[in-house]
Image (cartoon, rainbow, N blue to C red):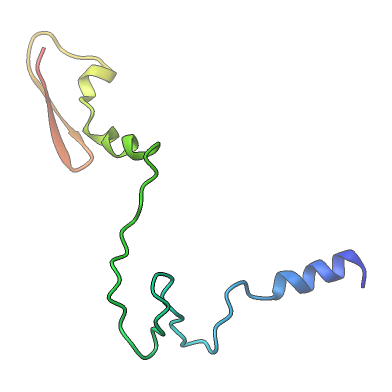
Amino acid sequence: MSGPIRDNILLDVPLIRLCNEGCKGICSECGNDLNTNQCECQKEEEVDPRFAVLKTLKKVEIGRINGSSEEKNIEVQAGNEKVSHEP
């Protein structure tokens, strides 16, 4: 078979094989069949420590980065939190 034909066939093969369309698969932690049992595993999202600091970006005082007013307090919206900046 030529390269392009083989590549097209391989691209059509699913990466995750399931027994049927309604299959829930197996738990990646404990291996339980999710079609017959509910999994009790705690699937916490592990954050790479190098990227953990990115969670605090929304908590940074906006006035310190974007300028500030020396005459009065400024309250700005940062995500869902209000951040107060005092001169």
